[in-house]
Image (cartoon, rainbow, N blue to C red; front, top):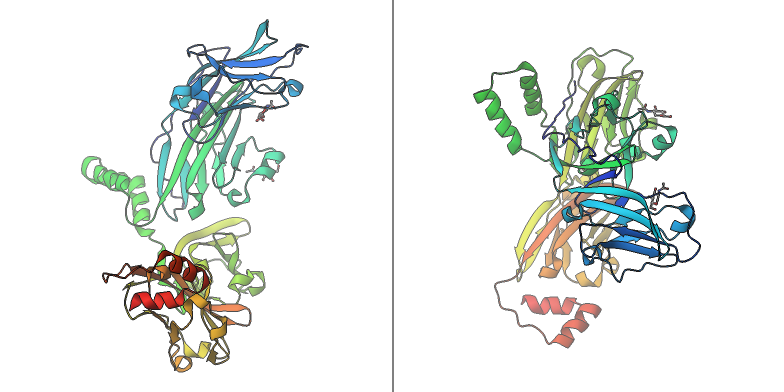
Length: 524
Ligand SMILES: *[C@@H]1O[C@H](CO)[C@@H](O)[C@H](O)[C@H]1NC(C)=O
Ligand SMILES: *[C@@H]1O[C@H](CO)[C@@H](O)[C@H](O)[C@H]1NC(C)=O
């Protein structure tokens, strides 16, 4: 059961009108464009140079490269600091020009010539098209699949190649056609087995990419590049994942469906699925456990294997041959997961994840497998929320709340830290450890006396000021394991009470040496 969402429309990439010029098509934006110019003839012995021009401009010079260096004194100023050529161009015959930050106004015909100061020989011509439209595809977070559209003319030549790439956060191949082992090796692991293209794409010209089991990190720009003879056609698609609620386009479509158009079974089914796929689970950080619900049809085959994975591909829980397989799970999840008894018969594959921490926020996938076939699957988004606390500057104190179970605390170490990773407060071996705290917090923190009995690990921070803004974390450690992690976001509003600013020199001194006396002053 696949949910495919095709939003927007594929754009027909333009075809070359010039039989001779190579066409290079790109979207306006940040990725540099390469205008190819390969030469394999004789190089003049004296004063060899390569000139790139655009005859419809004045001055027409885009780039001039001599043997040793660029000569850009007559360069058209529109291209300033945006062009470059390989330093080894004479040895390699690769006279290609790289143009950074292509703009719409860069569209035009570029001629690449070789010269020696007296004569010039035309090597090639490149027709550059810079388009402004980029396509946006919107999909609900956690959707099972999405199509990133890219179309070109049908009946592509046999040797045409297609690349889907990303350049952000780092350059990576998402998918390449044809699938040679080299390309396969270059593919980013995160996309392995999650992407596919039309098998018949050379004939149809439909180069759209289907991306399955979406993850948060899939959002962003994708570039579809087609190499067709000497032409390079690039098309950019931006994937957006919408968090909650119902996106505007879908509402509009829904109105269209129910009000204007006769109801169509397939589409209706899809929308039903859409409504039902609110697989987002939210919990406060620091709770005992979170349930990832997944109930499917009962009486699953006895040989079925159930695998829960996280968005990094780590195994969260494995159930195989009728029992749990803790030895196969990632150690990050060791002793933290639990599934129901008799799950194949009941079809209740829900997972209990204990002590969820901030690091657990993200997507979880559950797959039911028989051999290599996937029988059932589900994606759940978990969000371990950070508690918000607000206080006005000048208040006597503020409470950063955290209640947990007392039995947990036995010989555990409790540590509050701030967003700069400074130690705010430490409680260990039954007592506070003020010598471990950062001096910024000296004499400003307090925890409940009977915390061991009540499990109340809340922290009182005295004299809060705007410099205390940020995220505080409370970690409960046992040996080297984090048992609990609570996050509290502290907002301190600038006070309404007028505070006398100390003279500049005192302020600089005290903040770099020991800010706490100052903090105390200000809050009075
Ligand atoms: C020419 O150089 C550019 C820039 O370094 C490179 O991307 C391109 O692949 C080269 N072309 C050939 C045919 O080697
Ligand atoms: C691509 O090729 C590699 C090795 O050549 C192979 O292992 C892999 O299954 C192929 N992938 C697809 C989607 O055909």
